Length: 342
Image 1: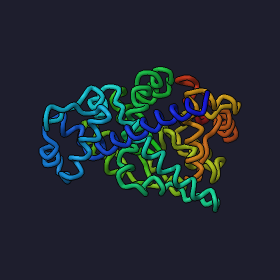
Image 2 (image 1 turned 45 degrees about the horizontal axis):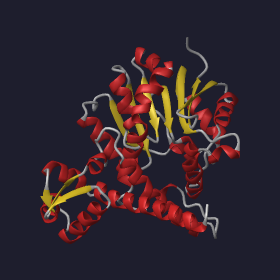
Image 3 (image 1 turned 180 degrees about the horizontal axis):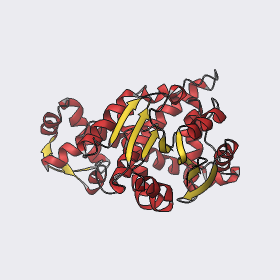
């Protein structure tokens, strides 16, 4: 490519980033949803209906129009097809892309500064931007919920076995509870306990479970896996994209905890991004984002894992494990069985 062609490529990429930033503002302030309910409205009417400042909303409407999220007729706006795709509840919603764009920019800025000192401040960096944290769980749910229900569940017999015994499933690092709600929808006899370190996530998870009619089967509490005692041994303990957050402290102690808190013959089910065995695989399109995210995970005190590392950790504590790969090999679900049972 010539220098001018390279510049043109990067200008186009920069425009895409700006577009996602505009979408993010509309998502977290519920402007897309407000305009969807109104059908069409002036910017000031949208501001009033959304309880937002009119000056900001007027300028957001112009920017959203410029990037094709809104259409306009004189002073009245309505959602374009692209704007409708940003609705959080839209089929195949594009919402996660906008949330990830702003989260990535925040984490890149933090990594740039911390690289000079080596400091790794931990999970609290996710809460440094007050508009991001409430959308972290919905982002994961939109990205992975359908895959879990339609692809992962049928491929993992452990879920139906736990359902057959009216079992307890514990989700460590539950976020907004989407994983347990998906289990409850698919398996009528499963009970669930979700545990997360952020009180905001616990409140959100319990509210969603109650709203969707799962309040008698699903419960959530704030806790830290490093100081956690289950009142009832679990039939299944899930760690959904959470293992790498606690791996570096003492993985052998963690896996022994999983084994000891399962009923005989119970299952641990770990879902993690599958870090590739060879560096050159990072240039594959599905893994480019994983390479960037692994840098931002370092800020939080984490790093991504190869599926074989997880499998070996289970085997060291006497649990037989099997690796399932999904998508283009980028998603790993490792299922391990505790000793005993039938």
